[in-house]
Length: 169
View 1 (cartoon, rainbow, N blue to C red):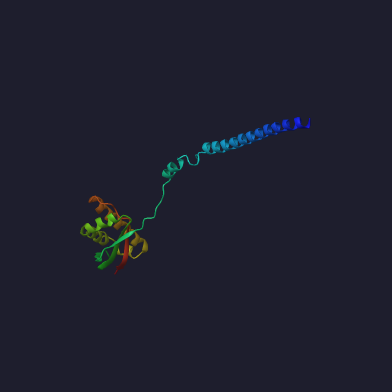
View 2: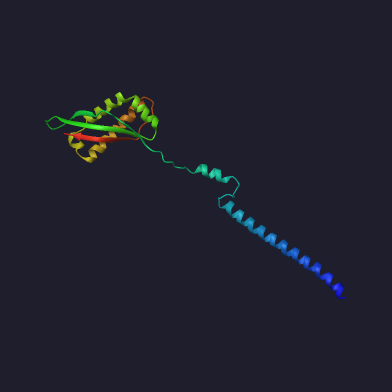
């Protein structure tokens, strides 16, 4: 009889092993589905489903664009409004932009730009140009003037006007 009881124990062990493996697979599948569902509902998307490319397009990526400069070779020299005495101003100017095409356009239209800059400098007040705020205001007026000239010609604008040297007397 010992021979008859041994074969019956082996099928019982095989049946229990199948149930344990089946339960393990079901539990792992349930865990995987709950993680995937949570990711999907939270808006993170599922990994490897192609959602990553769409989210990268939505985010603006800032890239560094170095500035390029154009020196106006000759100094801008003009007389200024003063108190009874004739005053002079001399400015060496450089134009800066992140778009090289803007500086190419500025070089092409340099006679007109230079003329307008001399007019802006000549209309300035001597006392104002002696202060840092007055010089900053002059640079902003020059920037506006250069961009107006370039806009009239249908060209891209520049981003800054820099003083390389500035003298008033």
